[in-house]
Length: 496
Image (cartoon, rainbow, N blue to C red; front, side, top):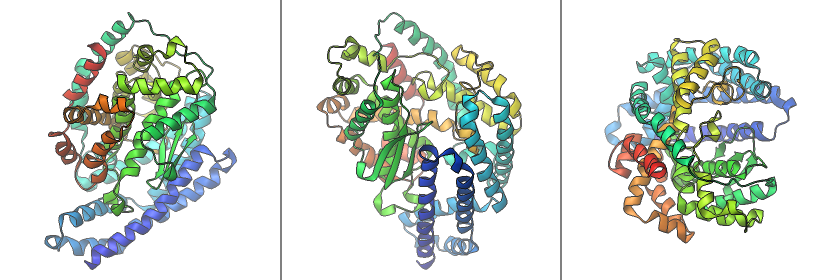
């Protein structure tokens, strides 16, 4: 149909500009000298404005209107493509150009300053910039809420996790709160009775990178369409044909960077595995941030921290660091190292048992920030209270390792944090189903894990955004999100 063809051609052109923005964003976080920050911010703001204008041109309204009257002439694939294009258009068209540019400039300013402010524990300086970001986020949230007829926070959440609501998250997180604190304490008590020898450094960065790339290859990463670099905050960026993974190295502890690489490889495999025939169209993109996180956590937690996969990592690590006779690299000990549970300050370094606590406290704060129930000045005290409640730690005065540790709020990404724990729940549900259908540990022991990723490709990657998250999970596992699987998995791995 003519209008559908025009829409798809237009969105394919838009994807080229989004490609450039993604690579510029990667460069900003990895290679760009500090002196280039203002010029880069101006350029990216201009590119964001231009892309927004192209996404909101009046022609799109006319084409969508024409197709609304011809739904019965479309097949299922065309309806899905139309739905995702319309969704992206509606998300963009509701915002005025002035707000789009203001958000981009405020976010770039806040993020760039945060990198130094965090090092200096400078909460007052950071808060000044963050207040501007929050004010713009609230403005955006109310505009989107009016269009969708929902709460302001739900409107932002929908940007990252379509169809999810705060009431559903409250229900899921409420269930977690009934058992997680006691489980954390029970695991800590159990592990305190075990003797675990930590590998002692130094572990040269070059050797760590080589080990990380070996694990990426084992997990099927396509190096012809991606690379590994270093950044302050590990991430996976770029585009499916050019995926950029980053990590950060600590020569005293190689496991931190290694597991970060494996985590980001999960993201990358999802991106590289998206359907090629739908490339450049919204329907061919990842379904949601929660689904995206499920793939990274599947790799890092479900796979890499299993006893079978820990054995593979241990073998390669011995070779990489020439530690064949080191007791710390005995397989049983090494698995204990990878599954240590210890309440800590830093989210990205948290184990999988305590990690949901980090997310729940951030979710509670950002939900109330957007609703206006609290202000930026209240964040440190609220953060400290929650850390003491969930993990028994105080962050009073420790902004660097407390409320300033994350990059997400600097650019106004409110509604993003809960997707991390949703991803953990999705991953546990997927693995339970997979284990019912194949010998996962036997496959890992063979050294060829491709059958595991073939299953994910069939049930998750190749479906992209052709259906809802609920349908995706139901088709793959037989039911929609069920947090009971995560509880069974955590308690089964750590307490039995």
